[in-house]
Length: 303
Image (cartoon, rainbow, N blue to C red):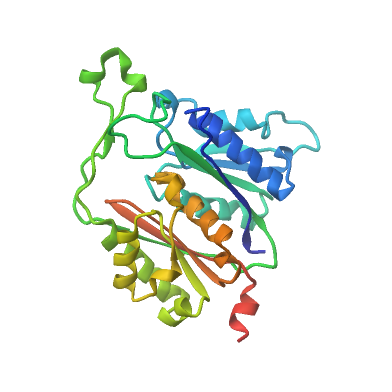
């Protein structure tokens, strides 16, 4: 059966700057919304990039898995579970969806949890120069015959070699390397890359401007910036109203942006009307677009 979104949640509580804690809270809320227990989850994928103390080992997914209590014991009757990190900058979450689909489609797992989000490695809520907001978001995937599932993933990358946009300058950080992070804004144009990925997706899905004008399709933009959405709508020839961005209060959630945009569309009511939802993720070096059909394909093609 097609892969479906069962629940989604985000957390940006101000009482902590720990990505591990925020991710745990988002996952817990997500499971509660769906009425699914941790024992039923067979997979957890972390797509977050910036984490507490710059931890590299063990995998962040394993740390979140332990906190939530997913598959910690192997015994008869309990669903075995595994977790891993899949980091690909701003587009990691969309790649994680396609990875999870492989296991859901084969029936190897019944539920897959995807989590993303970022924090400064010092876990301070506000650090000068760090461009991303502290938050986490989770999305629970399963299978159901009442949806049309996801389409193919379409990507676009800069043709030029990209300079690092985040690194730890060990010479400057010294003994504080675990809590340090340097960032720089890339020189690419995220709108150009985003438009290229979306165009490929529109072609594959057989969509045009009329689908957006009439509300059959919406595009989830990974930013709250109006200029980005205005330029993107002009480049694609779709109405600006059909592009739903991140709630401005979230600021820049980076790796968790697709979930934040999804939640904003859901809360505003436009998600319930759309038959095709385009997830977009993009930064200065790459972009990805993935179509989701919240209703059965038979309904979509039956007009």
